[in-house]
Image (cartoon, rainbow, N blue to C red; front, side, top):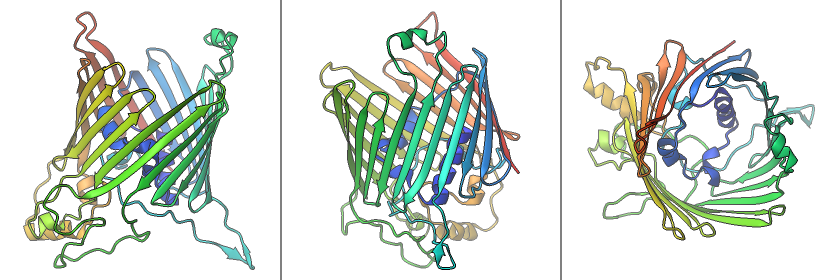
Length: 429
């Protein structure tokens, strides 16, 4: 389950039209959602409040295995549509498998002029969180420098304590400031980063092959119109998946550590299906699929993942990790199953087909009637290292609940490695 702060941050990105999925760091987001989901440990409580559309507060407490907490505040320049925990769409709070939308060139906000002078300001977000009793402070500042450029400043300030005295004696700095500049033009997305702690410079680049999507929303097709031609689709191809390919790389150099690294990545994702071919023309619709590959030549690490939605509510993923130097390998499989409430069928099947045909799926958006039927999601993963994890996330009354367990099948003395429960409640106005 997403904490309240990342939920507000993603709402801010949507409100300002910034596509965070077009970053190289999010290349494997779909497979990570199924195979690398986080299981809560112990008992975690979270209460958040949005007094208005610009300001948000959040309070968290960990009761087990140790007692600690935090207080956070978020302020944005743009009005955000923050929902209550009782009616928020669960897929907005859960990291899940999805098909990426067509990359588009970001558009800035409309210019506002008064007496011949431009009076509109840049969009920005301010976030701060204080952890108790350690006194650690996290801060984030994000601003839109231009329609295609976004700047971020992240900082961590951790005061010395008895728990980290040894680290300070060795000269380890537990405080850090990192600057990031992101430039997205749709087809290309570049990210430049610098970390003050170790003097690390980094550059990430992602290129999307094919055409770009239109900034404007596509028109709604009628039930009698022919199925629209997908972007990048070739004519007369003899079957197989049709989609879009993205490739990128990452290079980083640390002056303090005198080290460097490089990573290469590629992603294939099917294009969002309009649903017209399967509902009206009875054609075989291709399953939403994402295939990714990563390679770090310096470390010798190779990773390949395949994720697909095999039905409306079930997604499966498989990943193989291999090191070309040590020959160590690991195979991980996982599943994601969305649970829905059983509702009585509509008396008119034709009306249901027409409603589905008028809906154009973008990414993982669903009709409001379908989205409201979701009552939870179950995730499971298992690897050749004998680790098994189960997680259930859903809603009970007005609270969001996460319950999970991690087990080690190879250990007879301690088969349960971790178990946890997370409760989250937030409201507006």
